[in-house]
Image (cartoon, rainbow, N blue to C red; front, side):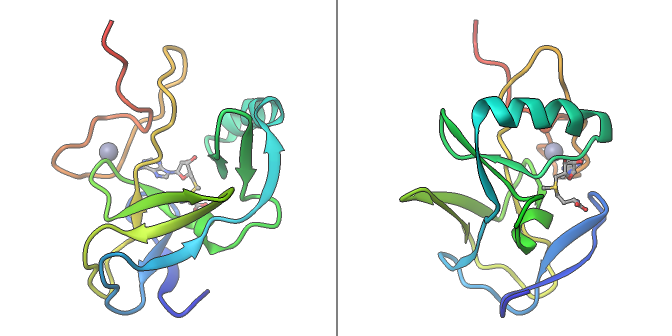
Length: 143
Ligand SMILES: C[S@@+](CC[C@H](N)C(=O)[O-])C[C@H]1O[C@@H](n2cnc3c(N)ncnc32)[C@H](O)[C@@H]1O
Ligand SMILES: [Zn+2]
């Protein structure tokens, strides 16, 4: 919990993060914290996570990920949307969730997870935005 946000039940999935007050565009709302792990370790953990259909792993760069399930904070409860009101800014190995528009009190905070495209794993997206792509994974690259 910090001054900007509240955690409660979400219409997208289980718990979500909501604006506790109006959040101006450009606000650095919360850092995405957790255990820093290698991409190889993240792949192993995601094999288990896929069985549960729930992951708190954030891809930091080619070599490193953050597992919010371990020593994470409330940022791990932010759900995905194909029409996000937040972006992720990666600076100096830290990830910040930043408002990309003015967000009204009570709106759910969402960012685009941009999970890598994978022919074998597709997680249905329940964001309900008008331009929902149907899956949390990003679109297939053009052949
Ligand atoms: C970082 S957690 C988000 C918090 C989660 N709602 C919770 O209660 O713990 C990511 C997981 O939430 C679910 N999720 C997030 N956004 C979703 C969406 N747009 N559609 C379907 N499931 C979603 C998926 O299970 C995903 O693995
Ligand atoms: Zn969607």
